[in-house]
Image 1 (cartoon, rainbow, N blue to C red):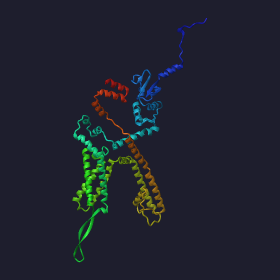
Image 2 (image 1 turned 60 degrees about the vertical axis):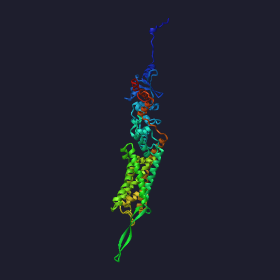
Image 3 (image 1 turned 90 degrees about the vertical axis):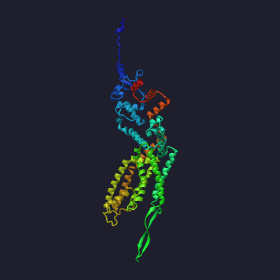
Image 4 (image 1 turned 180 degrees about the horizontal axis):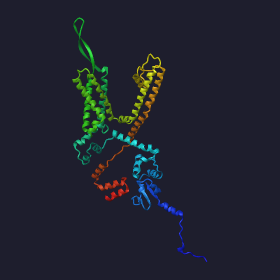
Length: 493
């Protein structure tokens, strides 16, 4: 007769596999980042302490107890690399993500951007060069769009009076005068003033050059008493010097009158007097204008001096007025900035050029003395320096040339070395110019609108009469604060 077992005698047998799977599930964590679910071990997240993922607890506001997961509204592509960093200890940069966005994501997760692997470092840091380029272009003020009234108020430092509607007559007129004389693309009137300024600059430079032409000068003739051989006196005419035609004086007087008016108006209406005086273009402007009045004073009070003509040399500063054209041409600004950015490469070029000049000047001096050479042009190394400079820069005036075979060989090496030395830094300079120019073209095609939150919110509150707390709630919902901090701020509001 079979024995029936009672229920109390039954034993529940649990397989080792189910026990291990339960323990494994307790050690895993589900992370939902931007709608993409990731699953990993809790121990993996503890590998990098003092980070956001290493401090996950079920008490956080972004934990969903129903789905048993943590939700983060962040970039899922960057998070995949972040999670891989916890697993492998190597942080790689995704090529489909912008550099500043990657930095913001790493800052949110509490990671250091300097931990990026060397294989991705050059690609990752390229955005920093781009940001530096854009910052330089912002300082160059290449924007040809007309600034808004809010931007003008902020630029001239009376934004509070602008938002309160308490602008005086001078505060309204001052930006208009400045835009009229300093921002040629701000209005049609400013374009006309800019064209007039360019016209007077060109006329001034043309007059400065033409008055040195022999056909444009008037001889100064004086009567000289001459004693003849018959103990009598006679009069003769002597040409002592030549002066520029009188018409050039009136042309320069009209041009410098305009330049003086322009300087005074720009100085009176400038936003910052100290920055205006320090600007290199403005220094050239008022020094060149001042040189005209100094010449007038010298002609009146110092014309009797013997070396008075030497003082006219300083009037060459007027040629520097060509740099004023940079206010009217963004291309000239970019070109000047290209040379500034390429200062290291240009310095390196000069160094190697000087090194080659000294070496080849010494070589050709001794090479020409090895053989019999009655027509030797290289009597000293300093003369060889001039030949080496002309040869390495591929100018070749032909006033000096080696006559011996050894000297010709040195000359050939000098020419080849000069071509290579000059050609090496040229691609860097060209790439810098292309970089600045491309960013300028891209910026002009896609203007960036920058909003100052302080004044925009203040103006909106005055127009719509919305409570300030409501605006703060909207801002908190759209900002990237931590969830627990948002909860605290919402409770206080």
